[in-house]
Image 1 (cartoon, rainbow, N blue to C red):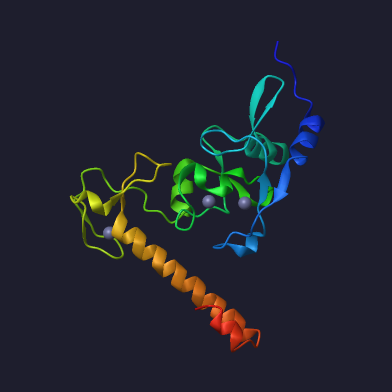
Image 2 (image 1 turned 60 degrees about the vertical axis):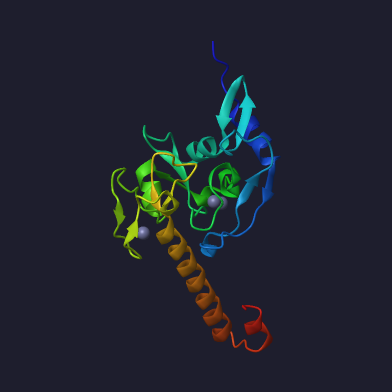
Length: 191
Ligand SMILES: [Zn+2]
Ligand SMILES: [Zn+2]
Ligand SMILES: [Zn+2]
């Protein structure tokens, strides 16, 4: 028979292994991440072994608060943005279990929210995206995220989007400093 989980004990164990993380650069309103400092699986997600089972910490914490996730849903990290984060297990957000950073979503919603193109059709030879057209028959123009091996993305568009995001962020910071009455030395910190 499966041993029942002692919820309070598990919760105490989890809280003993948390450390404050950084504030997501693209979504500062979320506040800082709460990082799991113990074991992660190969994909980089927080796991805890308890009563002979492997617990996915983010999912478990989420379900303690919101009830069981419906089939097909997964906790999505709002602190994560593939345009800024390193791909796959290297992304630090996979270890975040800040409940305010987790939202139930389908895998498809995750992809859309992230701003990533929902995958270029496998046979499509030209990108007619925001920054296109780009020749996708050239492998150098095709990018495949390690975490999403079945999707192709247009590499030149991805790069342009990244630059545009950085530009927007810089402009927002500049405006925030100006609004706060800053000038001179603070401005120079941006360049
Ligand atoms: Zn987070
Ligand atoms: Zn991330
Ligand atoms: Zn493109």
